[in-house]
Length: 208
Image 1: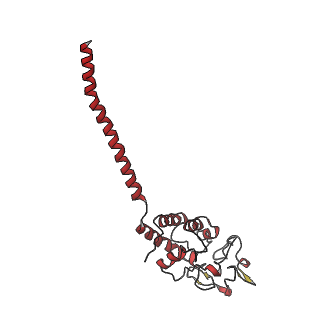
Image 2: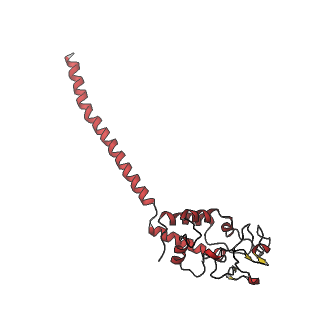
Image 3: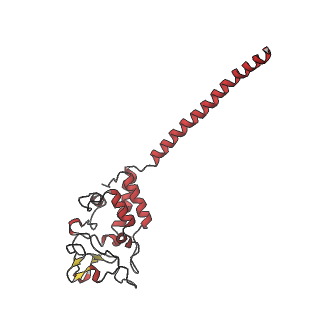
C-alpha cells in the first residue's frame, strides 16, 4: 500500500507540470490567434489612401459619356461619346424632364429603341432637378467627390444612399446597358459598386 501511494504521488508530481505546460501552450496560442485576427481585421479595413484611390476609379466612370451626359453644367443634356449638346434644343425644365412640347418621354421610351444610335430609354428618363443639378462635367476629382457626398448638393442622400443609387437605380443602370453604338463606362457596374464601398469604408476621402 505504501509503495502504491508513493508511486501515485510521483505520477501526480510529474504529470502536473505537463498539464500546466499544455494549458500554457493552448493559452498562448489563443492569445496569439486573437492578436493576429485583430491585426488582420485592422489591416483589411480600407484607409484614407485606399478611399482616395477608389474614388479616382469612380471618377473615371462618372466622367464617362454615359454618366456625364446627364449631368451637364448647363440646362441642356449632352449626347454621344463626344458629349455634344443635345440636338433639338432640349432643355432641363422645372422637373428635369423637359419643357412643354419637348418632354423627354416624347422620344425616350421605357426601353432602348432597337438599332445603333437610336433613342435610349428608361422608365424615368430625366436630368437631375434644377435644385440639385449635380454637375459632373468640368469638375476635378476632388470637386466631384466633395459635391456628390454633400447632402445639400446631392438631393439629401447619405453615403449609404449613394451606394444604393449606383448599385440599384434603374436609370443609373442604363449606363451599363446603353444600346447599340454607345461606349460603356470604363468599369463594370459590380466593379464600380465595389470601388464605392472601398471609398465609403475608408472614410469617403477625397483627392486633392
